[in-house]
Structure formats: structure tokens, C-alpha cells
Picture (cartoon, chains in turn green, purple):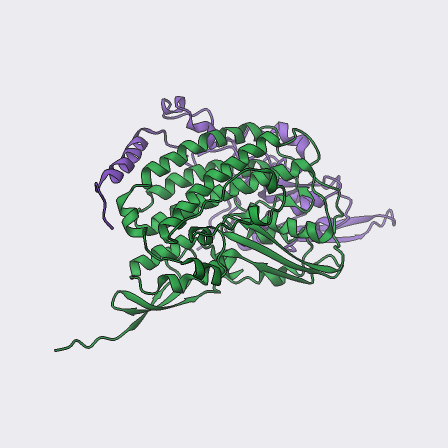
Length: 368
Length: 193
């Protein structure tokens, strides 16, 4: 006697707690195993690229906040660097250091969310993510102090920063920097040897070296597959060539490596912040004199930076008017998502949630 | 996956969780206790200084959302000058980016310090003319006005609340001010059913 079986389609999402936003995975199932997967996105499309073409170069900054809203400061920086390269604007020394400090703090804050959300998907319901949110809150306090907002900062401007940091910023920053390693150790004690996490994530959702390159993955997803590629080292922008830090890589390219690379990166970011605090000039200009309406010369530029999730590039075409002629965003979340199908196919549905969480995407950037 | 000694990692992790039983809570019981926000808070309401304003409409042109609407006309008494007849901000469209405040050359615009802006009706979100002036309940924040920063209390930082001494005090933490500032607006009557 033989059982008559057939494949069926299971929709995960668009509105599902583990899809980190409005994302739909159309999975073809053979029993509990996924045999085919089609990612469906676009539910959060706001037309940011087209909106940007009607705005001034400064007016675009609030839009970049809303790309990847967990790392708004890094997005501001990426946009401003692109505009500065296009218009040939120099940035004062002190502003450069403050930008690096803020961008690296943002990387820690974003990785804390990424690791916490991954563990939430893994079944460690709410405990690790709340420990991590607590430390992120301290960083957000600093951002609120300098910019007045907790999530959408709009703080970095072409040619510097919107305004100087207040006097109490540096003492508070120093306290955060001395405090954080203790909590990183605590996370390690909590999870590094946790058998449940290891059993769930080791060897699951492997992205091979070749596949990682072919799908043009970037950021921690690429580095977890064993490729030492970090734009801060490979193509230094801002003043990253002045700092000493390492680029942590994984070996297997599985979910655990992606988690672990992020935990190591946070320590490296902290190293950069510490060095920047020491090297930073105590006083100085914070903003170069730029016209209120920037009119870059006719031309085009592609500028890329390393944001927490990977390579964020801005392609801007200027026609010497106050708004860009073409404004294209190359976001890391979308490109990392292209590897999703290859990682998931063959795994069970419970692993699929974990693999998806380990990529750490932000739907605001995928759909734009 | 095989482990040499299954459970050691779990126990180590649980020790961390166990330590948390004795930690001071870092959360705040919100409506009763309030944290002091940043001096540069970009609250969701603009504060307008109609004395300093010279009706250049730069703020309206800068606003990325088009939330500011200005209507001007020539001053009948002084034909070389323009006067403002209507200054209207749709705070429902405002994204609190602060670009209007930054662009104002005459220091006539401020972001608000208050942060509770819920309204019962959508049209109440549109504020205009005298409704935009500073008052007891509509305090301007120091965003882009560094000289005002000394007038504000220091922001509550979570990093300062982690001290071991704080564990002893279950309530009345020094960093939390009691509900000093009332909500910026008087509560409107509940909508008629």
C-alpha cells in the first residue's frame, strides 16, 4: 500500500511576527520540508528614489532615515558622503571624528537588534532581545542628546554635522564605552555555549563562499561565509584608514557564524570609538560653509559605505540643479535577500524562520 | 550535533538570568513617572515667534513634506514690506526633521519641547497663526538654538541609572522627575457619540 502525497504551498507572511516587517515567503512544502521558495516583497514601497528626485540634497536626509530605520545615522552618513564627493565639499576634522563615532555606535545598536531578533526567532522568547534592547537604549540616549530624536536623527549634513554635540555628550559617551564590554561578556556567557542555540543554528542554512559572492551578498552575511571584505578596509571612506580594527570572519557560513560575526563586530566597533575619542580634536569647526541649496556640477557618482547590514551605495546623477536628476539606492537588505532561496531550500519550516532571521533585513530598505 | 557535556552552557546562561533577579528595574511607569527628554527634543509642534518673523517663507520652501503653508500680502501701511495673513502647519504631515528651524535665518522658529500630541479629530492637527505662538504649555526646545540649552534640565540617561546605589532606592529615583509638565494641551471633550 502506498500513501498518496502531494506538495502544497504555504504562505508565511506578509504579516507575520517572524518576517520582520511585511514580507511574504511563498513556500512549496513537501511535508515539513521546503522544496521551493519564492520571496515576495514590495508591500512597503514608498517610492523613495522618485521622491528624492524632487527634493534638495539636504531635504533627502529625512528620507534616508526611513530606509533602514534601525541604522538611520549610517544612512545619513552614506548619503552625505555621496553628496560631498559629487560637489567636492571638504569636511572639518572634528566633524569627521564625530561622524565615525556616531556611525560605529549605530553599528552596535543595529547589531544588538539583529542578534536579539535572531534569538527571538530561535525560540528564546523575549529574554535575550530585552537584554540587548537595554544596552541599545543607552546608545539611543546619546543620539537623542545630540539630535533630539531617538530613531530618525537627520543629524549629519553635507559638509559636517547639523550642530555641535552638547558639552555633556563626551562624558556620557565615555561611560557607555567603558560599560559596554561588560555586557558583551554577559551576552557571551548567556549564549555562546548554549546547547539549544548551537543545535538549532550550527550547520543550518549554509551559504557557501562561492554562492555568497555570486549573490553579491555583503556585510556580516558575506563575512560569515569566510570572505574578508569590509568597505571600511577595502575602500576606506571618511577617516577609517586612521583606525586599527580587525574584520571578523566566519568559517562555515551557517546561521551561528552570522550571529557570531555580529557579536565580534560590535567589539571592533567599540575599539574604533575608543580610538576616535582619543584622537579627536577637542574643539574646532563642525560644519563647512556650504550653500543652502547645493548645486553639484554636472556628473554622476556611485559612493558606497559599510552600514551595519552591508554595503549601502548611492548612485546620484546631477544636472547642476538643486535636486538630483537620478537617485538610486543600492541597499544591502535587498541584495542579501537574494541568497535566501538557496539557503532555505531543503530545510524544515522551523529552520527557515531562523535562516531568514539570520540575514537581518529591514523591510524599509528592501522595498524603499 | 553532539555535545561533550550537555547542559553546561545552559546552566552558565541561566546564571546570567538569575543575576537579573536582583537588578534594579530600568523601566519607568510612564504616565506617572516621566523621563526628562533631551534639550534638543524635536517634539511634534512648531513654536513660532511672530515678532522676529520677516515673512521670507524660507521655512515653507525648505519643508520636505510641504507641511507649512504661508499666505502673505503687501502691507497697506508700508508698501515695501509684506505681512503674514496666515501661517499654518499641518502637524499630521510634519515628520519633525527640523529642517525648517535650521533654515530660519531670523531665529523665529523653534521645535517644541513637549511630545504628547494625540488629538481626537484630524482637523485639530492643523495649527495656525496664534495657535503656534509660545505659551505655558507650548515650550520651545533648544534644537538649533544652543544659547537656550542652559534653561533646560539635564536629560535622563539610562547609563546613569545603572549604578549599584540605585538598587537600594525602590522609588523616588533622583533621575526621574515627578510628572511636572502637564500634557501640552487641555484634553478636548470626548467626541459626541
